Image (cartoon, rainbow, N blue to C red; front, side, top):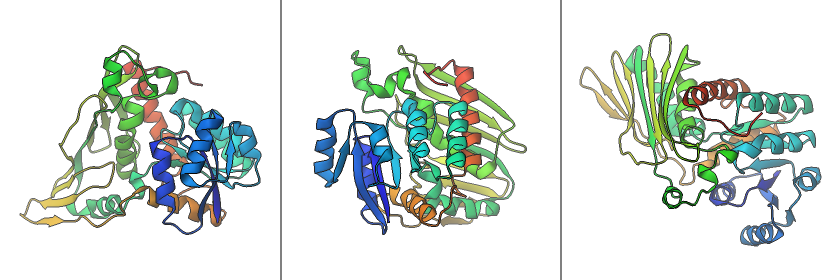
Length: 326
């Protein structure tokens, strides 16, 4: 049994708990929030026994084995380090750190304290993502990858009316690249490895946060074009183009439909069924690793997290995106 403490009382933590309920060896025993009222309300909603307003106290608690961090991006590093120094495992929402330096420090702390640290990037654990990986050889030498993930933020209307919430506040390390674009960068680097060159163009909003952007990644024999946005929607699928055919992906962030289209006329629907709450796959991986005494995921490895953070760092630099970071 892995007993989780929760940091963050938002929609994603609600979904995390609901997904975990269907798994063996999952239990949430504590929640930490900035206010006692919010912690108590969340605890009552999910029948959680212990509440905290001091993260250090929760980290030291004997009632938890691991902590799921779902606070704003800019808080991930400091919170994770304090928790790991207390000997607890950490499952940290993406983006794991607000900078490459933060991700490096988090991994170093995990290694020094012999605890499990994993970035909660759900996409790479999904059954349909594994289908994509398995079928790439069928399309021959890959030449292009068009990654598309544009999702109009529910908070953008308030931003346009002058109310700047966390998602559009540079103090909290958000924005289109770190909240949306990271899904595409993770998928690209998982499938094709570290790029040789990074180019990024972004639209910067009045708050200093990027509303949308595009990244071009140059690999040894292919080019990836990644398009992401928090200020527009898109129904355009993603596509991996090979010399023998293409793989068309409906919703790459959630492992949506996967279709194979070969140049010889062959078409095949490769989509397989997935759980309704897809967070169960990353949680299951984390629990399995923790119970086996493993300190790192082979899928969302520390090495992959560092590669992704490096690409994000270069993209931020080129776009002039700055956070309150290390």
